[in-house]
Length: 271
Image (cartoon, rainbow, N blue to C red):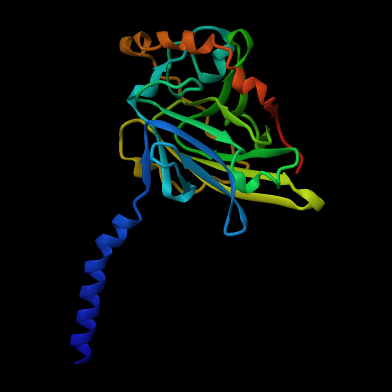
């Protein structure tokens, strides 16, 4: 009887395994609008992702989500020294843009959730501790006269940080130099009333290209370790042909991004 019981238990476990794996599959978001930001979940300050591709919008744990920058986001680095941080002119780059484009994910960040309205007295600090992945990651804004304003760059020392004003909603350009899975080690914190510090640190996963998004579930990056230097890849003719829209987006001064007075703090931060 004992052997039969063990066999039955094993069979039940094996039968349940595919269902459990399916239930654990991440939500892949490759188009539409999403925002990352803090909110109170079960009484705790928590970074989550607001998914506006559903109706009503869904707040998702970062551990359950992979953002995808598919082939529609691929373009060529434009000429000009102001874009040198993205790579050589004409090299491929995958860009999730500041200005919404059909068929491409439009990620932003915000401090607008009602659950934190009374807690954020001044601003939220968004800190990037490390980046894991096959290439270089940059986050930048289309600034005045189209000149890019860098917020984060995995080629610089960590940690890096920027300030997000209370009740703000911001978009930027998320650029990746190579296809594959990336992990961003992110923290959001604020000084609440009474001197209390509210903080959460999590991993945001992005899959670049059209392969399996499960590739974004890499081991977490080592805190404070910069990403490997990017390899410059010679562009194909079709890559160069696809970058014409960049100049339109780059020349737009996005008033919403400037109005929130997002302050990039370069280099190493003080804790």
